[in-house]
Image (cartoon, rainbow, N blue to C red; front, side):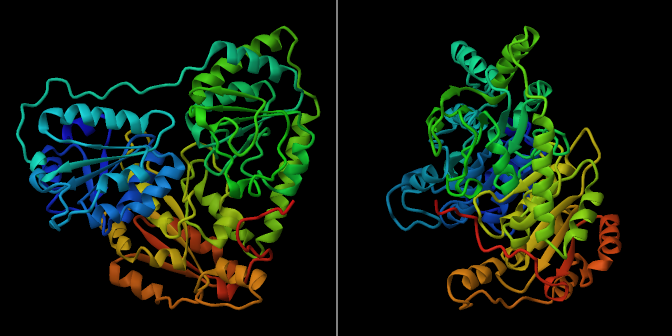
Length: 548
């Protein structure tokens, strides 16, 4: 297993050592080719592996014990499933003679495979050492092939301990790419060629299609993205709307468009006003998952295929039509798009006062190579998911499923991926967190220190669940209950852990504090005292909805 995962390009795995995975981790140590990051809990380890995969573009690996330990991964596995992350969860299992017999054996979980199947794209069990390599190959290919997703793999401890001859060939299987139908591509190209103001909506499934997107943008087609599809086209590109996909100026611009092509996106509820966002018509769709046809929004045409293969095929056909004079973009389209983008940016910036200088200085520190990891917070929902610009498809990581506390775990995984980059200077990870989310991860703060993750934690501290308070004010008559939390003295907590710490309680000092934080290496908390600085001008009270 250790050798095979190394052949798959895996440079780091995450987890918690246990009696029921020690043979695997002992092999990792002896071989020395895959770094193992010992987290303090299995959920944290899974979040780290998830972000490692998203940032590196490879396979994330989390290794746990069976039973309770495997169950501890559930929340983070739901996140990986939501985000379509290629993640391999390797868990132990009790000895074969006691397996699936409900004998209350230590670390046993009743029907663990069903739990894993509900959380994963697929789940596998290795019954014997002879079949181990074949099952490993199948599991990894399934996790990595589009539509990608988490895969579970359980291995009984006595199977882990079996000795077999090392196979001559330990290479992984080639990934499965969904080839688009040529006739379907011809029809889609013919339909799009009739439009003069077409727009692409890019989701996370299009992350590997950047070159093909560039070809389409060169023809004059505009781009808007989901939060998961950010950076596929640089967000400073004149034809990019970024992720300002539900803001009023952009929706007004949609009304002037005469076609939209959605690529690799589920058009999620919180990015479409629960599927009531008025999108351009006709609506076309490309996805590697055929079940996405017609889901959430009806589509005029659907092409099943890998995003990169399909968009390259589409670009080739439209380029030919353009050369023949058969595909002409409205000359006012680009300027209208830019006007809508700028109006949406101005709207968001107005609402985040007095924190606009924080965003501007974060953008300056991030420079041209940002790595922006966000937890579910009022601050992220207000501006973090959209306003700080991203320039590449692996520049941003967000807890897509909405689970609080997962962003910090992901920040550690992103930092480990950067430490192992062979081709460029590692980037500092900027991690946006709230005080409630950070307290979920007190143990993982120690992991960040132990692994010397180069991580700047921008801690937006309002001493409680700010979004819950806002919802209670808006919908429950101002009855604020269970949202005010005891929070520690983060300076003392950081000191006890050997973690860097700075405090910001005057927005005028933000430039100096961020410059000081950026100059330091390793994990550091920059605590932003929101009670001292003040509230946002726009109150965020949960995902936006539309009643009609």
